[in-house]
Length: 371
Image 1 (spheres, one colour):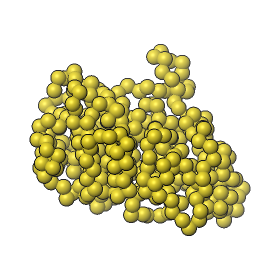
Image 2 (spheres, one colour; image 1 turned 90 degrees about the horizontal axis):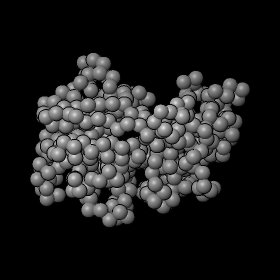
Image 3 (cartoon, helix red, strand yellow; image 1 turned 120 degrees about the vertical axis):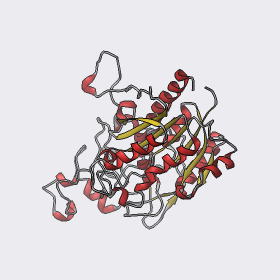
Image 4 (cartoon, helix red, strand yellow; image 1 turned 90 degrees about the vertical axis):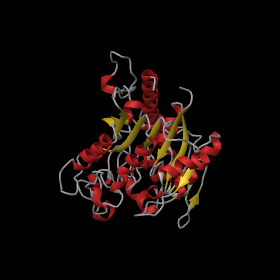
């Protein structure tokens, strides 16, 4: 089992790829459309001295047969095909346009690639909203039913489970659906959790409690301040404060673990006309708890300092090592952007420790099945 080959689709900043590599897989190719993510992936390849090839392209334009020829690999030796397609069409925090969103059908690209490469295992990550996303006819859960049917139509048997990153040593209450599909039969078992909520310790199995925000962001020191009107690119440490002065004034009024909309004693101007439901906007994290799910739409605040968290602090909360470097810009919070800045690269990615748990269990499955 020393030469397990994999192909990564929708690779993003490489969070999932880190864990899969750590589990012992050789990633032949990474396919990603965002140019800054591709820079991040290439920097990791250079640093780790792997033979992975990055394809900066729209996956819909890739012919799997040509990809196989470019890589010099026949379809059959592929052990693992994995990826996390764009989640925005199915996210409960978004517009939930599903397949009507131009990104929605990208979910089925992994089936198209699997039909050619015939991997022994397929691994997919998605937001929980995929389970209830409506299809074109408005049927709740219809999109997921179509996806499962598509896998079954090419002789794969899928299993799926909602997994929380905090259960696997990531200080973040991030829940995502993982689908594992195998050919012919499916004896795969999802990895057992390695950490438990504090109220469950001590426990029968001696598992440690969840890591907290305070556990992981200590020791970085004060970040450098971003100069207004400038853009910072490719900072190796990513420890840069992008907080505008007015936002700093707002968050100064928010207690640790709370959010701006809850501060009813403040003026409407300071509260930005936020609604009761806006519980993650201007949210100050709690040092003694795991973080809320990191999202692209906003940056959370430091537990005790009146500033946004830096990309490096985001990376620690997501389970990246300090030796991993993000490329691309470090921006202040803006609206829709064409390419991903460093905060968004992290928020879009799979936490590496969770990816490792999945990859390690897949490797074990392949070994036990002797396939």
